[in-house]
Image 1 (cartoon, rainbow, N blue to C red):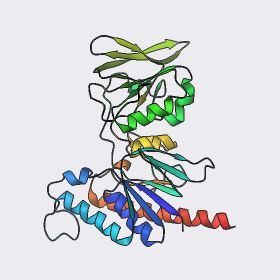
Image 2 (image 1 turned 90 degrees about the vertical axis):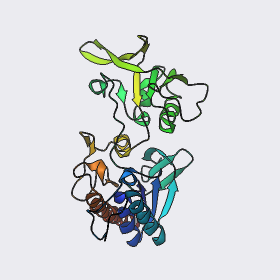
Image 3 (image 1 turned 180 degrees about the horizontal axis):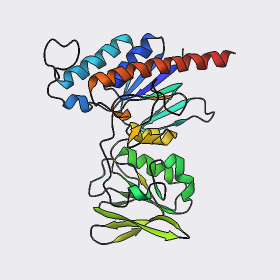
Length: 299
């Protein structure tokens, strides 16, 4: 049977992995380490616990159970999600390698890095983008900025490099956490606001004003703060996102065939029980999708 790639190792991701693996699929889970669950000091409202347990212990137990069943784990930061050249398989990229799968489940939790830069929300789709792979070609020979200071931001800059005349990494007061090639400019100044311009009734980004009063002229700004969470990866694939949450149907399917989501990233009750339930549904749905895909290939 085909393989299913799961991004996130919390209750939703592990639950999805258990159901998909027991259904016969090859399953790979991508984890960047302890998640939000590990920060919970005591959990005592979850079925089957005779006494309080820490979130970290519950998380470790879940991962251990999945490993016992043969689920494979890749430890590292996911920086991109896309399709292969034939548009028949998903491709998940980490900072070190790429992995191909028949289906993907997004279960990396809710995005907790929300840019609060004045003017940002108003300019989304008007020069502000969350996906370099999607929009890089629109910035041929133009000056672009990437908002972020880690591997995710550097990946977006690398995607822009063959197209843009100049790429500036904007860290908003933070230091870069990864080495930066010399072809990229880095500005560590705090940002004050985005500036816009209106021509022929169309409003677009003009640049960014730094807290020191200096204004950098930009034709586009790509947001890549922190790590690539479920919402950011969903946007890259063209999946619907509303109010910061991925839109799914009752079977946890997005509008992109083969792409599913579960847990905090879908909104609603931010509890382990809800995440585990949605993960189980997503795992079974991905399993059905992979089986149907194999049947179509043999027909």
